[in-house]
Length: 158
Image (cartoon, rainbow, N blue to C red):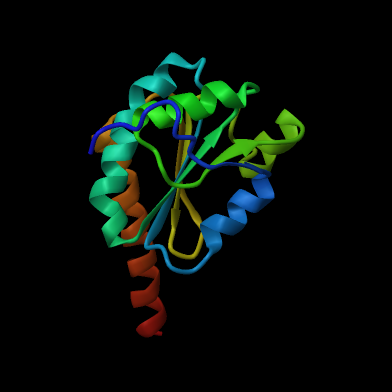
């Protein structure tokens, strides 16, 4: 798939931590991977292709990828997303930074990139700060899928 030109503007929707957690809990996904990033963050830009590769591989299997920009400059964020070939809805952090950070996880220091993996029910299965590669993203997604499957087996055997 060829990247879009910078003139194509992917949707960038303002959102809160509470709204993101609600999206992670929405039915229909086998797992949700939430990535918080910014265009000025070099490790964020470096890991972005792996996130998109993961979405292409696991999206058909029910992965929901939530990309959340912390950029103040929405023009730069939209241009970056367009260059990366992102055409699906992405999100923009709004409100007070500390409320946003604590709203997603009190364990999160606010460092970028930050990645959160949720199972199908929206339960946080893994979290980390800092750059990751495709293998780490994939392991988190598979653990989230397995976490939900394991819970369903336990519920059925009670």
